[in-house]
Image (cartoon, rainbow, N blue to C red; front, side, top):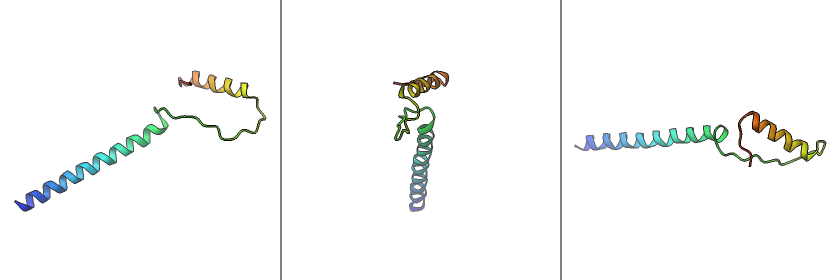
Length: 69
């Protein structure tokens, strides 16, 4: 009976570990595609005007079917 309980505990532990592993892989995939990731601009060399940058971002968003708020 102790061996059966030990095997059952190990199987349960492996199932929980596999569930966490699969969940973390799926979460990592969603970070880049299909997620609500924010675009952050850290630096700007000011060679291009802000209006042109926003226009280009809007064009790319419409072309790639990306919602921009």
